[in-house]
Length: 88
Image 1 (cartoon, rainbow, N blue to C red):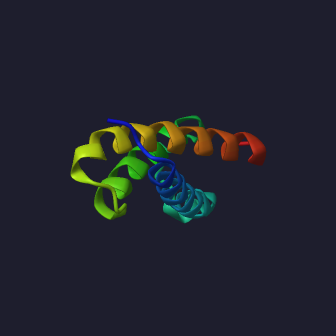
Image 2 (tube, rainbow, N blue to C red; image 1 turned 135 degrees about the vertical axis):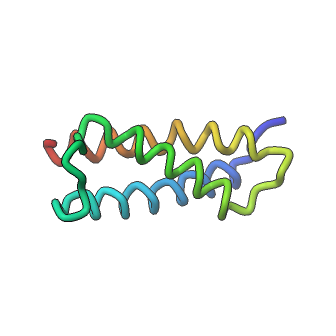
């Protein structure tokens, strides 16, 4: 089974929304715990992407395992790019 272009676009949109929201929150120090480190942000973000795609993306159950893997990859890439661009 393969993800369609529509599925890939849906995953990308969900991941962009999740990572951007999380990044904005973490820029505010009151939302970060004392152990938070920007070099670990991509792990947090990719995990959130996986969860949100599973919960909210209109993707068939038969493709969901692939969709979750793709969400981790896409979410991690977006998060790393944002942290690097911001200079954290």
